[in-house]
View 1 (spheres, rainbow, N blue to C red):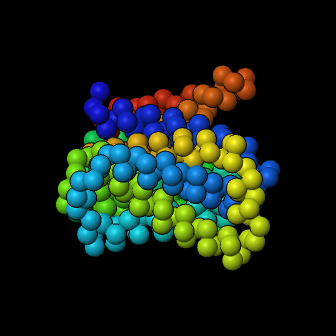
View 2 (cartoon, rainbow, N blue to C red):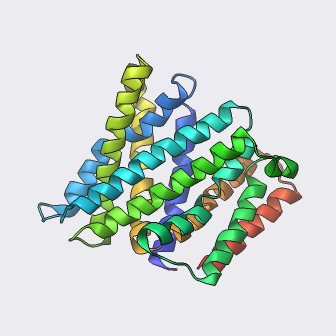
Length: 290
């Protein structure tokens, strides 16, 4: 197994675990407050990891690195906001489905921003896995997918934001003038999480007074969200340092497969033909990608 592939699978699994923990906080926090947990509680772990990796070595920081980090960090926050807005309209399935175009859009933005192309096999894998994810992502009606509506545009915007963030973080890691792939990814995680903590913290302080205090009060669960989320982010960033962002994000859609399997095993939910076909397509798409 390729190193980037193994790291991606672990990152996807850990992201699923982080999401399950994060859901436990939604009753005590606002949607944005629960989202903020993943950033603020990850900061100390991200700094400790980056400082341990670099251990006083020159990091090769430059303007391009900060430009890419800023692009990725802001795009990820905007994408999250778009996805949450799509959900608020009652179109969870449609918004989710369109947001899953992230990998396909990452292929476009990767070519546009970094000049990175994809092989025909990779593009085929992205397409096949996308179809599988659409089948697994909710009980939407296919007719709804053809109707332009608010949820569709917000879902597409979310997918674009997540795609741009992935390309931005890969660009930041590659822009460093020093370090191996672990060091580059670790420094990128530290910089992005720190910036996102400041940006989203400012938003909550101005527009949702009291949320930051509630976030601090939930530390017993939140600290695990931060720790596991940081390890997952380090995995994503490391994989994207080694491999094209579009391919990594396409393989990372296996996270939804983990969610479905968790529901089947732990919650005893029965899987139908649709779910089994979706699982087969996701696995087939990953096979084409690798």
